[in-house]
Length: 288
Ligand code: SF4
Ligand code: SF4
Image (cartoon, protein in one colour):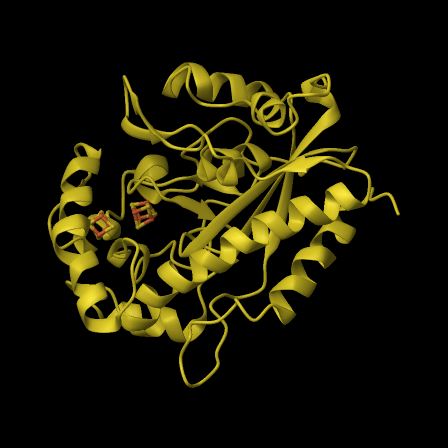
């Protein structure tokens, strides 16, 4: 059956979120890794995708380029025939509560959501792409493509050739904060995923227009800076924003080995700057 409403897409994600065994922190309590998914949709030819490519680097895929990599034997559709379905998975209340108490190392639930939860997120990307394809809408999860990788942006340093955060921004989920994280209606303590699909789906209204920093108190009003105070190594400052190198080094050298040794998880957890802040679970008051 063809899919032509956002509610149908949401139902695919909700059902998977509710039933898939992978949505688990792998704790004896059996609790889920994430809160319920939320969806936003952009047109594949939204001019902001090209603008992001110009800003970040020519390596950044447009939706049409990601689609062409997945379907090399069929003519690439015009971007206007494509939709970018961006979804977010909020951290659970228990994970947030634990992480708020952490000051130098990620809490166990946070480390588990980064590891087991992101593994589930990868399943969710593929599940959505497969379900839409089966329904007659060829679809791809760009982050799951074999060519997905890190590149070096002339302006921003290390960057991937598909950015879940930038796709979410274009789709209307939210805007960037001082810490570089995306501030969404459900805050910045979320995990993102996306799928590019050949389908006609109503797009989400981007209430902040093209202002990519509209929902951050520092950028909008020159106040706050709470995320900077939460970082134990000074990787965020109101003067220079997010220092990716300092952040990366702390995670690689300290928090990742700690989580592996203490909780038996992998990946690269930290996220201390994503909680105990005005934009943890919502858009700060007065900005939306
Ligand atoms: S904590 Fe404050 S300064 Fe940091 S991203 Fe959120 S609103 Fe912006
Ligand atoms: S994720 Fe990076 S910026 Fe945030 S608290 Fe950890 S080291 Fe600091």
